[in-house]
Length: 204
Image 1 (tube, rainbow, N blue to C red):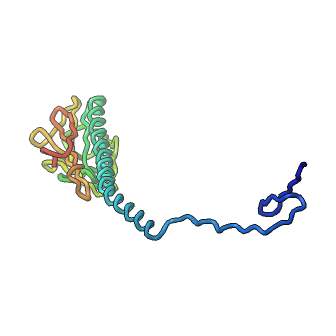
Image 2: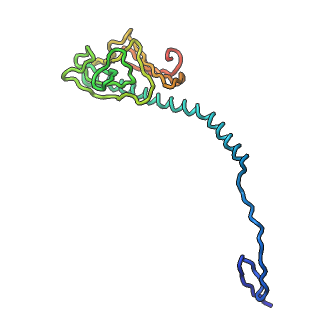
Image 3: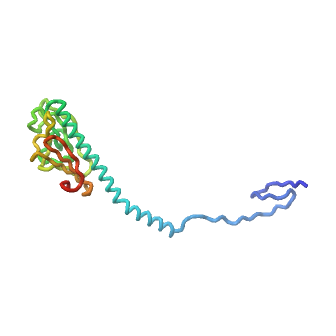
């Protein structure tokens, strides 16, 4: 015999004509975390953050220093190439005002100027000379100073670096806050060639 079924509330299936009985469901189990479990997770996260923070700061400083050094070296190469191309001296000098060369000993992190230096004998931008490129003051607190209080580098029409104290110069970039491992130096010789040194040895 075929028996017909129908669906009633709460998805209970009963035979046609049968009496419906109330259905009681067991309360659903609630899933979550206890206060103790939450505290353990937070403690683990705090430990991992403490371990990772110094590495992150070091990486950030190294990347920033690399950007700053590469910008300076790139401008030195540009100035040398311009001197050769123009057939006249080109000077790179530290600046405070952004319009004129700074005094001897001016720190290079204040920014620098590149200008065609027709007479090649001073760091004054005279009539007929003009700024070719400008680097603004760094927004951070890193320092960039040169040996011998050097504040200007002039390239001759042949690409030689003129007036270097002792025939060579070294500019040292230090981070602030201090991180000795991130220190970088740029050395320059009379031939106009520059080299970037990592921390250690003469670069401290």
